Amino acid sequence: MYYELRTYTLNPTKLGDWLALYKSNALAVQQEHLGNLIGFFTTEIGEVNQVLHIWGYASLDERITRRNAMAADPRWQEFARLNKELNAVVTLESRLLRPTDFSPLK
Image (cartoon, rainbow, N blue to C red; front, side, top):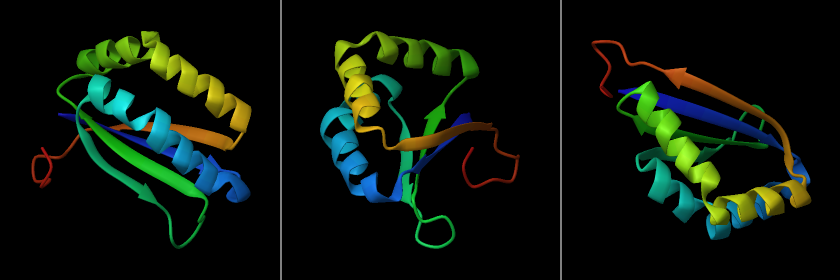
């Protein structure tokens, strides 16, 4: 199993707007295409204008296939357009994680 940790740093004044846009236009599309949402978080201490989410994949090939299908979905393309228009995302970081043999998540 592989886990993708995505960290979005947002304009602090647009965090609420971005979360509302994501919930209404992107969440269902991602759940349909990516399938294995582990968690979705906002930060409370430190850099407080961040959103983090973790998705699980059986393999790196599965990740590529699922993300390509999502990118081709017109609903995702509409979210991408609205997201760009909102201009809330400052940076995006994506990390692929592989659990150790003693990790509770395998």
